[in-house]
Length: 79
Ligand SMILES: [Zn+2]
Image 1 (cartoon, rainbow, N blue to C red):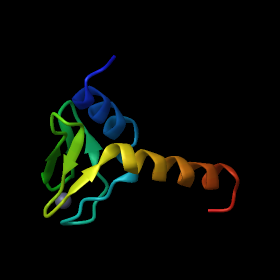
Image 2 (spheres, rainbow, N blue to C red; image 1 turned 45 degrees about the vertical axis):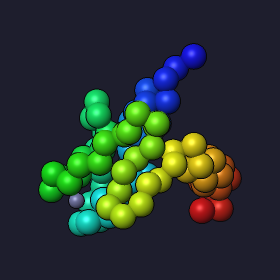
Image 3 (spheres, protein in one colour; image 1 turned 60 degrees about the vertical axis):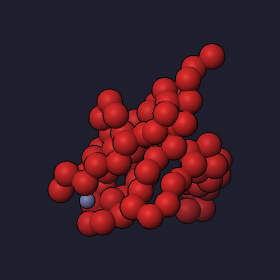
Image 4 (cartoon, rainbow, N blue to C red; image 1 turned 180 degrees about the horizontal axis):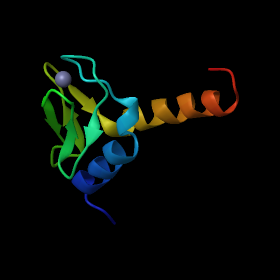
């Protein structure tokens, strides 16, 4: 059983292209700790497996469901 922080890091690493920087709106890149944008805005995965953005926390488990639904739409050619 993986720790939540590991699952969160894996999630952002595999889905990094789906994130845009909330500050400058560039595409985010994943590294070993979380996400970083080309302008060096960094967002780390917390121990609970959540990402910290500026004002609020995004729960990756919730977002994972959203992204799955979106991927289905992409694969179905409807997006
Ligand atoms: Zn940025």
